[in-house]
Image (cartoon, rainbow, N blue to C red; front, side, top):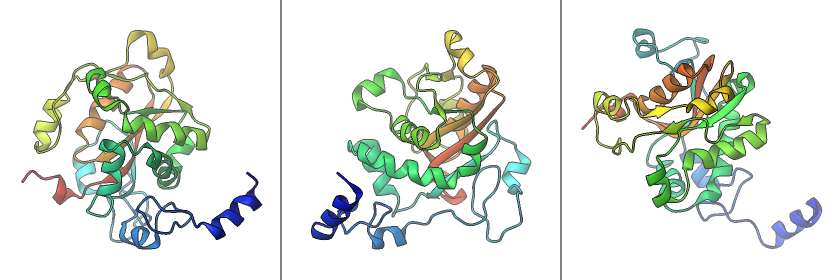
Length: 242
């Protein structure tokens, strides 16, 4: 279908947004788009947490006190009641059609990380869980992101060798213990990451324990740098156990 024919069809039958309303070019209705808190403003250069004012490429107190294994992180939006539904639809409701939308968000929010990255790696899922769910949401986002950016997609360079419990409901220390030594780059795949700057992709950043585990495994395999891009991140208050 030509661009003219597609535009004419859109006038007769306006495209529907992922949330059910009339779609903007973003893929969401205007109401849904306005409710999501996109992190377009100043953020911590280390973890991507939003800042109240622009102070340049600086890091928050937490990142200064305890540097992470991943060099930098960016999130497209805050994880709240408005973004949660879309993310969970991809994660648990077979809505893989949302992956392209999230990839476009990341291509903007993590543009500086993509520019310096030489390869993109999704946070892996254990084979037993992948068999039950049938797809890895991080991989579904990373694949179109690579197609948009022209970066090398390393689908299986990083593996989860232990089927960890869900991170939900665990404290920060509990999350770290849960994923300790859970990730690795198999010996036969290390040549794919050696000497490369890698961008790790996931759906949500909570305490950063999973991203830490993945980054450490990639660095141990020879990656020169690991950065992180996620669709959404929780606030510091949300990350605290209830």
